[in-house]
Length: 234
Length: 207
Image (cartoon, rainbow over all chains, first blue to last red; front, side, top):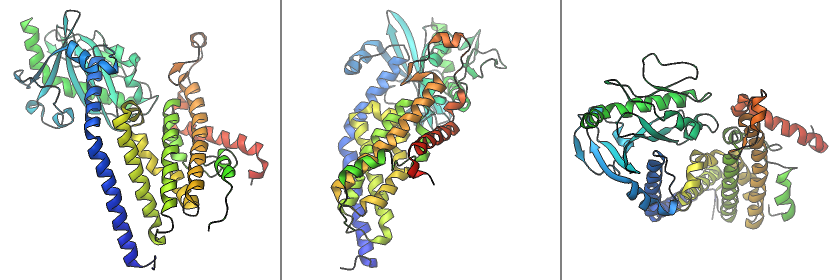
């Protein structure tokens, strides 16, 4: 058989692509459930991290059910429109206009006190960054924050996942008097132009730090009405 | 084509005399990208060893059927398929590792060592030597990655594998981490230093 003929070449590549395609499809299909379970567990771990709980991987679901006592979905007007916050996909929600979004919120109870956890999603330098920020029961003071990223530079932008950066958010306030001002991320040594609370960005990770600031701004603002309601009910 | 190759030299040559990074100058791009910290450098090295060994075997098995004019495409399809399967498996069975690797696992496809070894070795040799060649080159690549990662993390962040190694009193006495070490250009300079040292020990490599 002539292995250099056009017919052979075309048949060869078609067969190869079909075989590889089938192998990939088979792998993806057969591993899908496991991957989804892993992703869900990882989401639970991240949510718990934002309230400074490091859960044992084996007991993640139990720990999650123990601490997360409620879930609500709210809209930008501050009304509750559902209760299944966990299944809401932030990637899709941030693409929608702020007043149309379904806004997930987790209610967590630790040692008798209530915390509210808000998911965040934004863009870093190389890819998406995301996180969770938890508020005390005054719906203004930050209790803890968790950030993660897909591909920020190790040692630079990737430092947002470190405790040193996350702990800066603690005790910062979202409400200044009656005004709602999400926390700013600024270069170390500088202060923002408004009077909002701020944290220092990562030196060498300027674009990622700015991404965190923009993410906080973008994802927290739609919650303003709901948080105000929580404050006035208290 | 099928001349007898010495299995021992196939696996040990790439560690020094024929190192893929410092002698063949392949895979420099990923050396820049993943060596700011030691840990991603190690994990990247492991994944390259695995993908390189298996793609070498697969290409070697089908080497006699591949039409010459589309051999590069065939190699690419095999490598890309393998990388996707590896990343899917990691995601299902070692989720934490797959999260650490994130984009790096995809970067393996673009690593010139893979195409270089497939084209230069697996296309002309039997599966077992090809497997050893993949392991050998993978290890040779990993060694350089680890050396570069070691110096960049130590001098740039004062840590190794995330643990603080430069004691606090050094900082108290005015020692400062060298921020330049974290930036990509320093990876090239460290690699150049390794090549310099390596060549001065191996006179026969000097041109």
